[in-house]
Image (cartoon, rainbow, N blue to C red; front, side):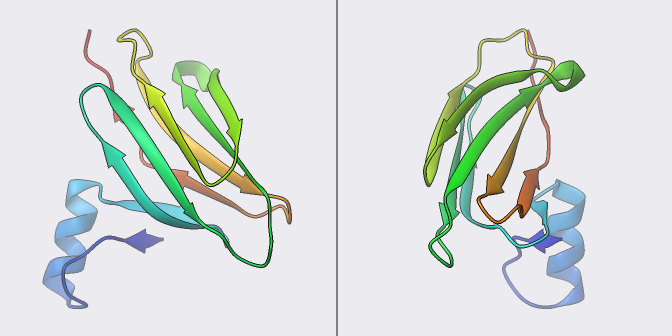
Length: 104
C-alpha cells in the first residue's frame, strides 16, 4: 500500500488512510492521481523500460476506457457508479487506485 501523507508519522499516515488517499501496488509506481468531480487523471512513474496499460473500471468491473502510456485521463459521465484505475506494466505488475464514487 502506498500512502500520500505529508509526513512519515503515524498521525499523517492514518489520516491519509482515513481519507482514502492511497493505492495498492505490487510494483507499479504512480506519480500522481488527480481526481476532480469531472475527471480522473493517472500518471505513472516509468521503471525498467516497462510499457504501461491504464484501465478505468466502473461498476460491475466494466472496463470504461483503456489506453497505453504513462498518463491517462477519464472524463466522468455520471452513470458509472464508481471509477477506479488499474495500471498494468509489461512485466505483469499492477497498481489499483481507490474507487471514486460517482453521484448522478
